[in-house]
Image (tube, rainbow, N blue to C red; front, side, top):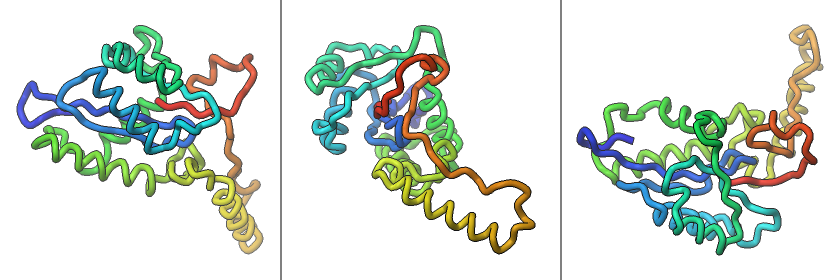
Length: 208
C-alpha cells in the first residue's frame, strides 16, 4: 500500500479463514517484521477464541522474511498452529489471497495514488473489512456473506433460498428450461484441490 510520499509504503497484514472467506484478523504497520505478524496472530486467536478450536489450525503464508522469522514461528509453536508456506517461485499458490487482494484493490474508493497517512489507511481497511465480512455476497461460497458461512448459518440461508427458487418456478415454469440453481455448498475446502484428489478428505479450517 502506497504512503503519502513516493518511496513510503504501509504493509497490510491480513488473516483470512479459507473455509468461510472471513477476514479474521488484520492490521497495518509502516514496516514488515516477524514481531508484527506474531502480534496479529495472537490477537486473532484471542478474538476468534481459537484456543478452544478442536481441529488443527494451519497458517499458510508467502515466503516473505516476516513469515519465516523466529518470533512468528515461536508464537505459532506456543499456540499449536502449524506453519505452511507457498512453494518457492510460484506466484499463484494461494488463489484465496489473490482473490481477496484483487477485490481489495478494485473496491470503489481505493486511493490508487496512495493514502494520506497511517490512520487514513487503517480507517479505509476497517471499512473494507466490515463490508467484505458482513455485506459482500461472495461468489465462491454461493453468494453468502463470509460472516454467514463463518457462523454456521450457510445451510439455513441456502435452504430458504432454494425454497424461494422452487416457489418462483411453480408460479412461472415457463421461465425455466431446466431445474433451479443448485444451492448446495461443500463443507470441505482445499487450498489447492488439484493436488489432493487422492488424499482422504477431512473437514478442516485453515487460516491464511
